[in-house]
Structures are given as C-alpha cells and as structure tokens.
Length: 329
Image 1: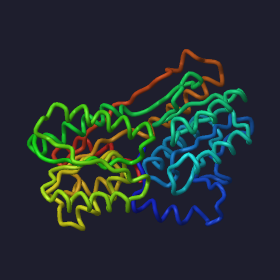
Image 2: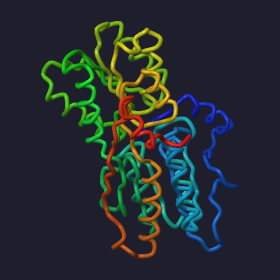
Image 3: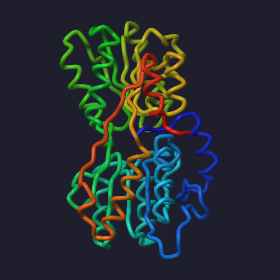
C-alpha cells in the first residue's frame, strides 16, 4: 500500500472531499471517467484511499491503459481515510452501476470479502491489486508488489546501515492491510539473522501522519539511542520524518521507507530517509485492466491468477541508477 498521505495529498483531499460526506471520486475526466467509445467496457476501480500519491500513481497508470484500450474507467475512492467503512460504499456504487469489471484495493481482507462475493454473484469479474481478500478463489487475479521480499530488503538494508547492531522500531500503517502485514513479516524474518539488533516496539499510523509522528517521538524519548526505523508505508514515513526533524535526529537514526513518492525522494536526498523500497503501482493498474478485459472476453489463457512484481531499493548512493522508479506526481 499501501501507502498513505503525503503532504501534497492533503491539499488534494481538501479540494476533492467537498464536505458533503457522500462518496467522492478522484478522477480526471468528466463525470469521473476516462472517455471511451459508446459501446466500450466500463471498468470500476476502487483504490484504498484516492488522495494518496501511491494510488495517484496507480490512477495515472490505469488512465493511460484505459485510453490505450478504449475502456471507460470509473475511478472512485475515499478521499482521506483508509478503512473498509469508507471504502465499501464506493464498491457498492460500482455494483449498483453494474460495471463490466471491478478492480479493488481492499482495505481489509475480511471486510471486503462479501463485496467480492456479491460482485461474482452478479457475474462481474473481480481483480484485487496491491492488497487482497482472505479467500481469493473467486478472483480473476491478484496483482501486487512482493511485500514480504520488500520487508526483507528493508530489514537487511537497515541492518547494514546500522552496522548489524542496535535498537530499531517498526512504524506500521494498518494492522489489517495485507501489504503492511506482509512487509512486517519480511522485516521480522530479516531481523532474525541479526542477533545484536533489538526491536523495541511497533505502532500503527492508520493513515494519519500525525499518529506516526507522535509514536516515533515517544519511542525517541524512551530510547534516545535508537539506531533505526522501518516505516512500512507512505503515511508512516511522512510522520516519521517529521518526528526525526522535530527531535533533531535526522542523520542519527537510519530510516527505511516504503514507496517512492516525490516528497519521499526529496527527503531521501536531504538525508531524512536513508533508503526507500519502491514498487510499480502504475504497472500494477495497467496489468489489472488488461487482465479484467481478457476475463470479460473469456480469454483465460492471457491471465495469471497471482502476479508479484519485484521491488527496488533506492539510496543516495544508487540514485542515478534507480531514480526512474520515483512515482509520478
């Protein structure tokens, strides 16, 4: 994911939420759609949180692919809260509109399971992207980054940067988002190889940068000798950077972030992040649209049921070779 809510996204939230409390769309095209031909397939795409730069990058990839394929794309999602309570009304709207296909980034693997079942009962094929549901048997496909491997990369990179010893903290995003739990798993697996590294705690930001800032500030007070932090998503990273700056710890505490938003890359270049694990959200969305159309057309041979895309670690040292993985703004 995952990730969620950079500073630039907050202004976009304010512009798009409208204060009505009704489901809001986060799109470019009139009526919240990508223009297409009169008899084009209509594909609904519900992100985890529409304003987050990770999902904005995913949206750009989806819109480019929709235009290329002549698809009518309806991109709608909760503007500023990553939760099933905020997401399900948008999924329900897609089903009411009887879209030809549905792509979801589930905010909770169990809470979104009934929505998948309902869509399938209406003969609407479903693909999950980034995160997924508990029972994937009814899905056409699940497309994600390799989150366990990403967590391992973060763990090994952090261990290398702190010399294989010291106290570290895990600043997570959501206790239920599958991307977050898998990254945590990979990170913990990596730490098992370093007996002199002590994990001193874990907290959840739940899409609120201020929550991450508060949690990290507290752990810095309790452990002034903290050596490193892994922030598992964009929200966690944004809040953690603020905490390090507020406590004059930039350059003293190694910080591994996840994703490569424009502001994260700037913070990497400034030294607040010491490494970023980047995904390919635009590629995920484009492939999802290709697969959903193939499924609608009965071309099962063109679809893989489970796709895992590789990650890349971006540092100041390798930036010239990895800068192309920054997410578009």
